[in-house]
Each structure stands twice: as structure tokens, then as C-alpha cells.
Length: 216
Image (cartoon, rainbow, N blue to C red; front, side, top):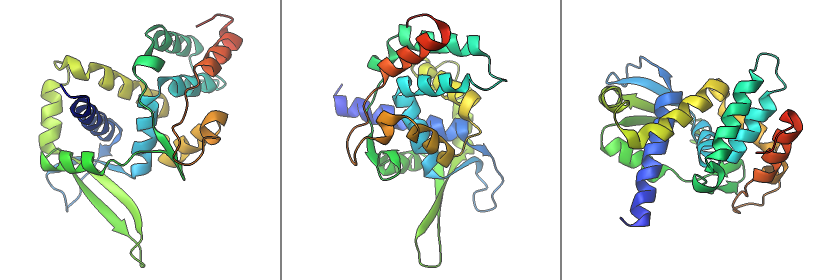
């Protein structure tokens, strides 16, 4: 299969699952055939970055270890599994940095998901017609499909597991909060406009060793 075609499929799967798992139940009179909604594209972009860059996810997980209610041994195991599976190399899908961090145009993906009846969307504008918010709705049709195929579609398993992992630790964060955390990482922050954000495997390895006295 053509690599561009494969990439399109991956993008569609990833973005849909982000909207599905990080959305919340809704009852909107404008979208009676929808059951869930995710407000703001910013959150989609920041979550997409974490899925596409397992090393940054690991770094952010290790940063959480400073909180008292975090199970450090669980974090240690998660980060170890990600690195021992070589995910930072084989799962990495680069993103460019724009004015407000990692970003990639998802209009084509959203249009496709809309065309097959999986999502609907709404845009809000202010008094000068500036776009202020996008909301993405999961249709009942898509929800039913997910409930049927979620446990059987093996090609979705990694993406589903990764969404659930990120949701467990960062699901309550807003898009802006995720962006601010990512900006605290020097290599992310110092990347120039429209340059690809480089990996930080060695930083994760160093931090892991300092915390646990073991090498990744």
C-alpha cells in the first residue's frame, strides 16, 4: 500500500480516537444524533503530539513523579515498557512547531470523519467574526461502531491503549495546560517556527536514571 495512503489512515484513526476518548457526554439540542463532545482543537493537537512522540510522553510522566499521589513504580514500568519496545523510534511521527506549539492541519481528517458520519462539528465566532472555539461531536453511529469493534479490531489496540494511558494521567488537563507543560521542555520550547520538534530520548534516559538508578 502507498505510504501516503497508510499515513492518511493512521491520521484518521488517531484523531478520531482522540476525540472519542477525550470527549465528554453531551446533550445538545442542535446535535440530537450525537452523544459526546470535545471542545477546542488545541487539546486535540497537544494530545496528538503525545501519541506521536512517546519520548515526550515519558518525560511528562516522569515529571508527575514529584506529586505525592502518583504511583512511581507504575510510572517506572510504563516508561520502561515504552522504551524497551523502541516506541520513541518506531512510533515517532514528527510534528512542526507553530506559534503556539506542535501543530498539524487536521481539516482533511475532520472532513473525512464528517463525511462517513462519525463526527459533527461546530465553530463559534466573536463579534468581529474571529474563530474562538471549535467543538467536535461524536455521533451515536460512531459510538455504536466503537462499542462493537473496540475489543476485536487488533489494529486499533495500540492507539486505544495509548489514549487510555494518556487519559489516565492527563485527561483532566486542558489544551492550554498541556501546551504549557510541553513548553517547559527546553528542546520543545527552543524549536523555531515551522521546524520539526526533535526527540528527547536521551533526556528521558537521564531523568529515568536519576530517579530510579537504572538505565533504560
